[in-house]
Length: 509
Image 1: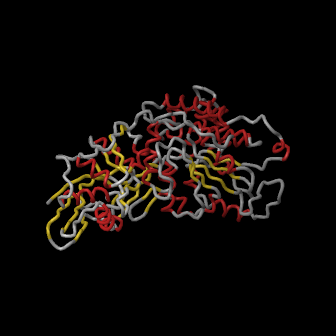
Image 2 (image 1 turned 135 degrees about the vertical axis):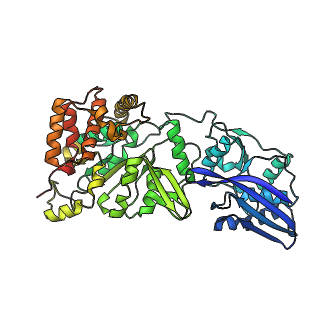
Image 3 (image 1 turned 120 degrees about the vertical axis):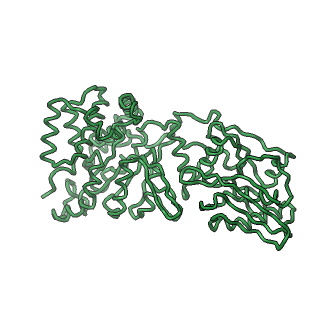
């Protein structure tokens, strides 16, 4: 007897529909899975047979072949367990399902037939909804799946419940997705700028970075507050809108090693990988590519502390995602694209000992040692970082002062206003922030006045700014003007933007 049921597996942050074809005939007891299954899918054979036996059914007299179509695409994970089990039951004549069954079946089976939650449910439900199909899935995945508008979901606890549903004897409840799930201002309290003493210049740079979506590098001695400042950037960024939240949740839905989402991710991510991370861990990879840290930071902040301790090859792979906002990973099994539009915040010591420019401790590093240390950050990578500033240690009198610091909520209001101005100006291009302005559009949107033009020309000559660095200065100046609600980029905006290019100045001698 022949049966056909539908399921899916994740492909990047999208889904691949899988047609599970099952043929069962009298013969030597056997269950074979073909169609490029990985080890987890091949092991489904044992889970499926045990779960079916737990139902009280016997298929020991059947020779069963399961084909996963399309056969040329590799299938991995335990998501297909439920579909294979239902296909086997139908083909063996143990389940009479309704004619023209179109539900997609997703879930991992335990040996006693309990449905366990799986990864990648969100993109699968999105694809099924686009195809007009309902989804039968583990009840534990309902919170994640229900964020998809228009979805029809049948949550189940066990294989027996799914069998009762498909036979019509005990239909499962139907849950409609996307009903009242979106609350755009659901911001949980986090680290506040009001807790940071001193650092007025760094706070100003952080505000500019948030308003324009600019990447940022902080140089300062150990304990000067670089990490504290970076942790407060998400708190002054605008909240995620619904589309951003959905894409971010899809990344976390398919990514291993991170908490599985139970509903939409509504907080901007903050990722801070250790400097020992590999290139594959940072950008994604594996035989079947998985999202890396830069994709987990999509629509949020990627913080690289002690950035000069990262391997050079690891840092260099950031260059393309910083420009394009996505990462393309090619492997023998295929090519996948993951979103990676994040704000980079990097922090480093100014020299190997960390005390160059620190009035409290003497630096004993030689100029060649300082140059070699800073050369770990390549020129092309530095060109892509808009704001480069030195963060000095805070004097005790500022640390002892209490109250009076501006809270993150007040800064966020200015950031929102500046972003609205930028979005209105860029609405025809589809971009939202000044950092995303294309090179061909820089002069159109960021043209300075005459005095500002002369100042920029002088700075480009004295600092040796590349064309990309000049464009970065103009974009930052445009953001500073937006924070002042100004229509034009003036010389003072250019001057402040140039001041945030500390590593373009002449090396220490």
